[in-house]
Image (spheres, rainbow, N blue to C red):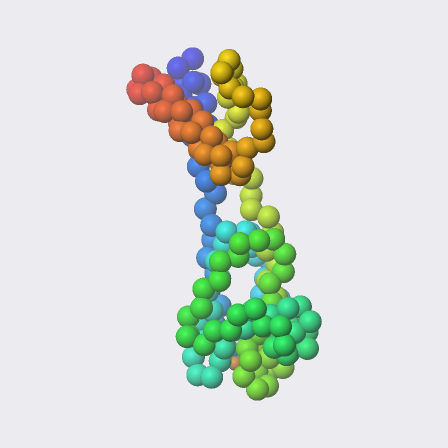
Length: 168
Ligand code: CU1
């Protein structure tokens, strides 16, 4: 019996761990076909990509139209420092090109599709404790909700650790 409880606790703890973000490196140069770079990769919100380059190359974070036309009319940000890290913080497709003359046309362009982050398998909701003095419920701000969620997670984690200590 104890082994099943122990396994359940270990499983629960694993479920509580946040999913790890991945980082991807891109050697940014002419003569590489980046059009299929993202194929087969499951890039998610929270992942990072790092462009490694030198010479006259740049990394311009651009719109889809600029990506397709190899123009920089709506550059969101432009970088030339040689190692540029982008944190992919939202779903959708990001477009990057090199702004040096002719480089984008020679393949220095990449579209990266970012999927939603994997469900983090958070702790199940604990029953709320009624409080006679509490005012009528108002919607929580995201910060408050997140704080309460973390608090509940910490309590559940503590109980799980205590249980594990008792069993071992
Ligand atoms: Cu370039």
